[in-house]
Image 1 (cartoon, helix red, strand yellow):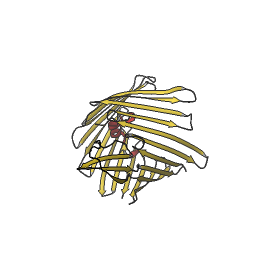
Image 2 (image 1 turned 90 degrees about the vertical axis):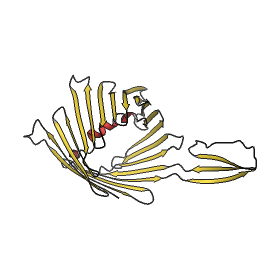
Image 3 (image 1 turned 90 degrees about the horizontal axis):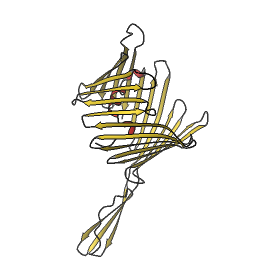
Image 4 (image 1 turned 120 degrees about the vertical axis):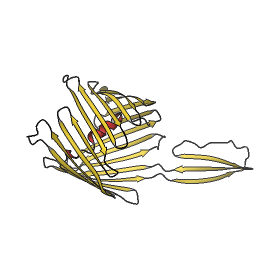
Length: 327
């Protein structure tokens, strides 16, 4: 298994506990569309239980890598035998026939992804991604945002470097601070060890730090994370029992607030190839259920509800629906 990013060490259990529970919004709709020239559009809209609405329009363009091949014949039977290079931009290969060597050079145009979004708070966000351009395993992201109403702006640079047993990231806020957040994870035979730190350049001081250990296998994952300057501890566990059943749990203890431990457990059951159901409950007695079904190719419907089991006679319950169209 590949080494995850620091924030994804507990991803399997976090996704099981948080995703596909539709009661968080009263109504939600999402429309996805892809064009032949590699542009993907996404429109989302949400209505909260308090009556507020929000929306987002996003366009994503992916420039897939392409190549131009140059050929050159060299008449030299003793030309050194070379293997394929590992350069992300240029590759070369030499094939031999009696009395001549054929040199093939390939130029690869680096893949670029451009994402632009506009939401109902009139914020314009742009993200440019370059993957495996500078060196193999390195992804660079440039993110900018602009609010025309207040002329507020932001600019960030993110770097992701991934190898067989290492996953490191660096996030730089270029206008605020400036500040940097760096994390790294080392993995070997399923065992994971990681840490993260925040640094304020102007103050020349470390602002935050966290650490985590974990173990990941194809059927289950387990992890312990110490965040908020090693003051908040969480333990997460995920188990894929079989092709139909998944289970997970998470316990959180804040050493600064007391001895109470927050606990949450969840389970997912795939009813058939088109639908699944989820349920979870926490230590405060709040339970949630959800149902997801593929109505037809490209149309997915979800419905969910949450109940306060200790106050069933009060109006603290929530219900929500979601509709997703994809073409």
